[in-house]
Length: 141
Image 1 (cartoon, rainbow, N blue to C red):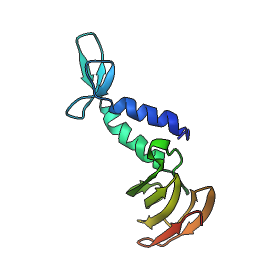
Image 2: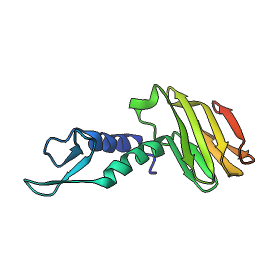
Image 3: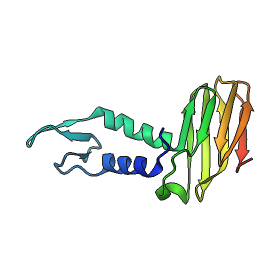
Image 4: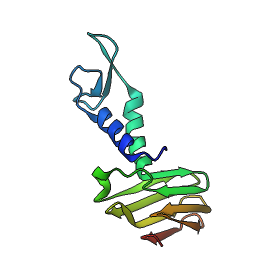
C-alpha cells in the first residue's frame, strides 16, 4: 500500500526464504516459522496468509470506487507476467497482463459492482458496468 516495490519485494523474499532454524522463514511444508527461543519456533499463520495477499496487492490494489494496477511491481517481476481472477473492492475481479513494467491488457469483470476508476500505466479511466459484464482495457488507453 505504500507503493514501495523494492521494500515489498524484499519482505516477500524474507517470508519465503527457506527456514533453517534462523529467526524466520518458510519450512519445507510451506508453513512460515518464527523463532521464539533458541530451541523453539512456532508456526506463524499471519505470514502464511499475509504474504500471498501482499503479493497480490503489489499487482492489484483496490479501495472502494478505485482499482490501481501494478502499484508496486518490483523489477524482478517487471519483464512480463499476468494474474487472473484477483478480487477487487466494490464487486469486481481483475485480470491483468504486463510487459516491461507496463500494463498491456486488463479486464475488469463486474460481479456486482457498477462504477469504479481504474489507474494503469499512468492514466486513470472511469469504468461503468452492469453486474455480469466486463470491459477490457489495453495499454494506457
